[in-house]
Image 1 (cartoon, chains in turn yellow, orange):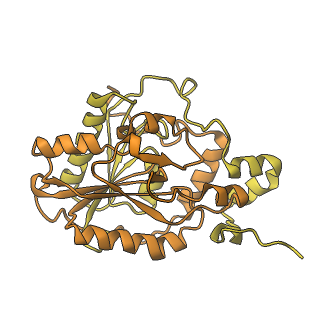
Image 2 (cartoon, helix red, strand yellow):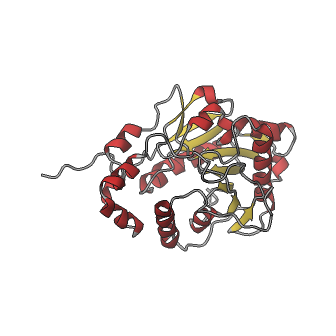
Image 3 (cartoon, each protein chain N blue to C red):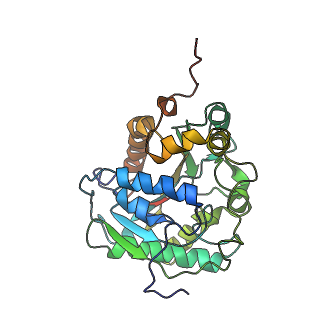
Length: 122
Length: 171
């Protein structure tokens, strides 16, 4: 995208990963997954986070800039509900077969990740 | 407000197991030079687009293939959708299976702040809200097809709409 002449900024809740992935400008925020700009109907917070992200876009002077935004989430991590009510398919699969977690944690992505349908074994 | 000197904790909301996988992803990330394009014009004159990983689609469009992911949990739908600047939570479906989507379905601006961006346009902070914004499924363990097909298509549309800057918003 940058190569196409479009300047980018990422608003990230996992800035360590976003920066490692090569994002040129990162606005880092410690908000729970699913709500990077704030709570529903909190237009003031959403606007403040957007303006801070735009400031990071405007002011970053070098590739790999990470700006740590000062916003505080009002709930503790224990109070935050960000998980879906039904665990995601991969979480359900890993719960059924913990050996797959070891594989994923070692960075071994199976070839099934690139195909919609699982191959049936003969 | 938090102390500005305290750095963001990337792992605050992650379980130990998820944190371990993220740390593996960080360790395995490529060490290629970070790309860089300066903002092509002052922000107050720039056209800005939003890109969300929340798997958002318009009601009139096909949703992301959540059923395919249920059948094969390693796979994520590598396609993308266009979200017009006038879209609200009443117009969209969220197909992301890894987060609670109820919040953004209640108020789209928590993840895709089109109203807040329109306010920034009205205040002159940005030049213009792009006509089109974008969403894809953030859960892509193998992003090859997404990078080969969806990203070039999104870039082509952004160029056609003279987009100067994009705000990438993982959820």
